[in-house]
Image (cartoon, rainbow, N blue to C red; front, side):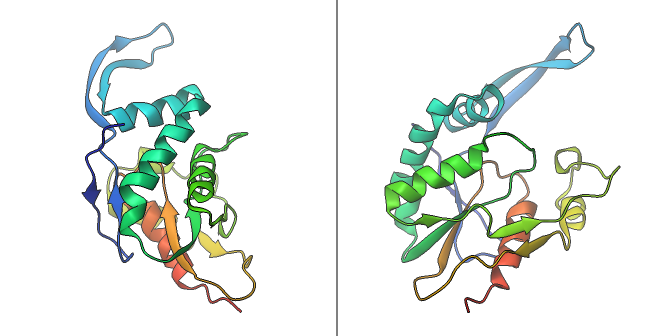
Amino acid sequence: MQTNLRKIYGNWELGYVLDKHTVKSIPTGRNEFGHMQFDTTRTEVGEALYQLKNRHDWNQIEPLSHVLHTSVFPYFKDIGLIVPVLASKIRAKQPVYELAASLAKRANIASFNEIVEKAANEQGLPQLKDLETKDEKAAALAGLFSINDQIKGEGKWNVLVVDDLYHTGASLEAVCAALATYIVR
């Protein structure tokens, strides 16, 4: 799978994205239900993520996990565990959790899906996807994340946080801020 690795910056020590998701998206008109339709061109990584998240094509997990393991994972030293960013949409099977689990299996380390918890949004508040700026998203996420103490004992606690889409980095920064408060007892 072709990637265009880019370094990203935030409240973490080191971060990368595999590629952009969308190259271009042109409106083509409304469907019979009144929803705008688009002719969208995605990168190879973007198409794999789209197929995984929107078309429930679970065959995309292994190629995405492989490319993460071969192109991104080598930049990180002494990773002790993987934490997926919490899913924003409730699904029976969460793509980002499955991706993190597959990467963890390849790297022979643990993945913790529930170490970071998110409080429920109040009714009527907009979803993150409907907010445009990083500041709006950060304000919507402020104080929503906490830690579920799951790790016991000694070990390497360098964390690789995995998210499926990166736009402004607000979700990733909120999760990293919560993780930074975690002290293994």
